[in-house]
Image 1: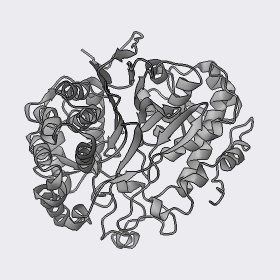
Image 2 (image 1 turned 90 degrees about the vertical axis):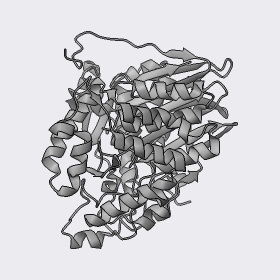
Image 3 (image 1 turned 135 degrees about the vertical axis):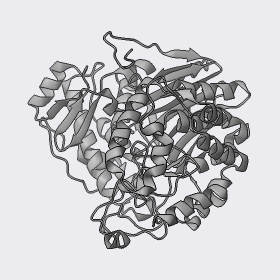
Length: 534
């Protein structure tokens, strides 16, 4: 039986609930979050439970050794958490050049930055959670210990990752990845039960020590020893001195709503710049050719500026306020004409990932995202732990003069971004679309689907997507309207049809009715998405 063969159109409905909702890309993780809610936890506890569970039930996209960001609405205020890690103290462009590198590599220790996900779980739990980590991480530990059947889309990408890693990972330092994720010399098949006792033991240690063991205890010692054994840059003091950062979210107003993102080093500001550009255009109630053209052009301009200016905020040569100013948006908007353009950065005025959403009946809401960056990440798994180290450092520029140039204890330009929507100071809810550089593009499309085109949460996610790649090249999904694609091509866009919808991101949405408190949720049809509701 082919679990990826779907010859007939399908349809999902928006899920409604009053007491709580958890929407994720994996049914088991969504249910884990709901179980924690039913045990007396709040939305923050549920998000932590789902996030930890996702490191086990969707290891192709995230892991214990990755980064995380969160937006949390509680007690009438929106809080931001940046749990992305910095580069090791010992690394530099010069040090990599001495080893023969001419660019940032994808695999091995060079692109490994300090993982922030375990610190995110602990920080969220300590500040806003109701249950101890030993309870919120219990479902993840159980799935790691006892195993679970591999779901269809997970199995597809696991097999693809195995094929890639089998060719790319050659050294002895990668042996633990194959032992952990390809037992028996292959990826687990769809429906086959996979377990990892090492994951379970690591998660248990993180839970019992509130992540101290990961940064300043037994797990930190194992990570540092593994790095030292193979000439890696990551050291014990890099882990010991790391702390996640509570940050003030940034926003733009859009047709009576406020769209919120985490500030740089995240790329959420790219979505906001594009939304700010679109703010000055009249948009019809049904998306037409001109709207698609302007969306694509706005996103191109925003990405050009993002690549030029986004970095660790301490190294940026312009501020988020400058990039989000009305005057800068107007200047960029004026450059959009009838024909597709090749974007260049403007001059601002001076002045693979998993996404989940959770909400409870008390009004708490969480927009949460974590990632290993490229699939399983660096290809390195710390022996005996199940910790797949991410390769986030691949995003650094190999140029000392660039704001995002690699440097010791610096955070790279980061692709993962949680989103949140408010109106008149009241929460509407969390939203997000994961998928590398697709993420800001997904945010723009989902927000316009919701606000401009009045689509319900599920329909806003179901709508066919486009993705700008580079230059004038735009990918569209198989079910993207042909007449619009042809019209965009006449405007100079290089339209290419993608056969795999997995390239267009995976999103979740939860909106809250301000009068009744009823929660309405949608989940991603492009993956094994599920909404668990109560």
